Image (cartoon, rainbow, N blue to C red; front, side, top):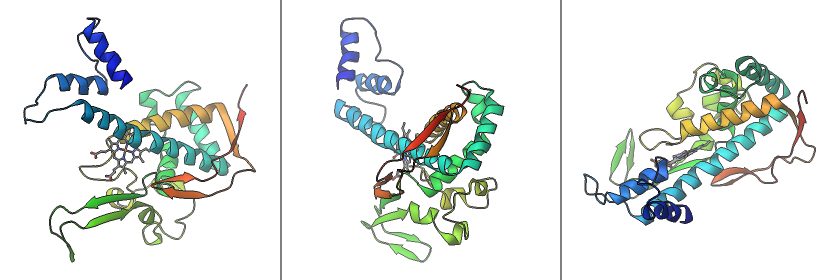
Length: 246
Ligand code: HEM
């Protein structure tokens, strides 16, 4: 509310004529226009709700992706070394640029494997708004359906005998159906709007971390993933960081 008020104040005292061109600014500018073409109008309550959705959907999910990926890299030194060699070769000791990010294919495989084993969103709840026939299934209007992302990502039938093993190599080939068997960001028209942003953010942070530090898992770490809507490490993830080339 304070951020919104300060932007309103800037307009009122004539410092600027627009609320800004970031997402919040765009929503506030839309609110000024009153009604959009289809009669839909944005009010302050809706803007605050959108901000909360973005915070809820975007903050903890990305933080958990980073947490579990660091845990997996710390516990798998050979993959840590491979990813570090790739980052050093592609980024040449600097911060990764946007073109370099797409060349970090081993890091991408590690992130995918982390999202498979520990998908931050473990279930996708849906409600049937009308009677639907899906194959042999009759789904009546009003039925609540939960798509079990975690179970799909841990299905031996889909992923094979090593389903519970950290093996990023499985993402080197597309031997699975991306929109059906691997759905950390859901799929279809209501999939995650922040997917590209989250992956970009995660790659930048992990590339910078891995080029500056080597890390091992602390003796104090107790592996205890718990599901409270998202998958969290119950006792945190304790990591020992050793600076490289200090
Ligand atoms: C690793 C990070 C992330 C994961 C795993 C993730 C996962 C998901 C999933 C599974 C959904 C679909 C939920 C459903 O249909 O029931 C979703 C929706 C959404 N996500 Fe993300 N998300 C991540 C990061 C972000 C970020 C960074 C943002 C915003 C900056 C964001 C914004 C949203 C929004 C607004 C929706 C609702 C989209 C809609 O209903 O049309 N997410 N996310």
